[in-house]
Image 1: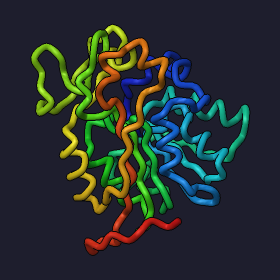
Image 2: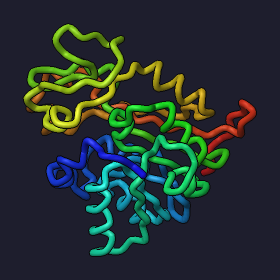
Image 3: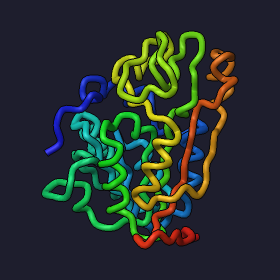
Image 4: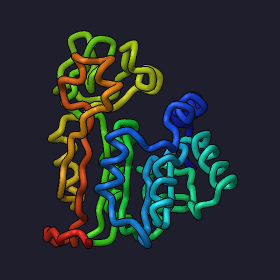
Length: 251
C-alpha cells in the first residue's frame, strides 16, 4: 500500500491552483506530444487530482491515473463521480515492484504520461522501471519537468538549491523563492539533464522529441529575469523492443 505523500497536506492548495483549464504552455505541449490518444490506453503517472487524466479522457483516451497522494486521488475520484469520463484512479506508489495494488499490475498501455511528477518522485530508477514495464514496444512516454538547467530569478527558485548550490548537486531540496509557492511546500528532486536522459535509455526509453515551451506571457512579464532562461522541458520517448532496437512510434 502506498504511504504518506508530501502532497497530502496541501491537496486543497494544489487542486485550486492547477485547474482543468489547460492553458499553460507545458501542459499543452505535453498533450500534443502524447497524440494520438483517441481509442488508446493511457497511464497518467503521478496524476495528482486528475487534471491531465481528464484532458486525455476528453480527447478519447481510456485513462488510468495513479498517484502516491491519497488526498489527491480522493479529489480525482470525486471529480469522476461528478462528471464521469470513464477514468480509473489508483492510490499507488509508482516505484513499487509488482504486487497487489502496484501500478505494474495494471496491464499494458499504449502511452504513459507524467506531468511535472518526476521531480516529486525520489526513486527515478523505480519510476522508469514501472513506466517501461507498463508500455508496449513502440509505445510512448511523455513527461514534463521544470527544466533541469533553469537557474531561477528574482523571487523564483531554480531547479537546484540556492545559497551556493550548483547545477551538478543532485538530490531533494526545498525552494525558498517567494514566488515558488508549490516547491516551498513540497520541495523537489533536482537531477541533471544527463541523469534524466541516461536513466530513460537504461530502461529502453529513447528520446524521440524534445520541447522547451516558453512560459505564458503573463508569467514572464512578472518574472522577466527568470523568463530569459528555459523554464520547462517536455520529452517524448519511444519504448524499444527489449533488444536495443528503437521502433518508430505508431502514428
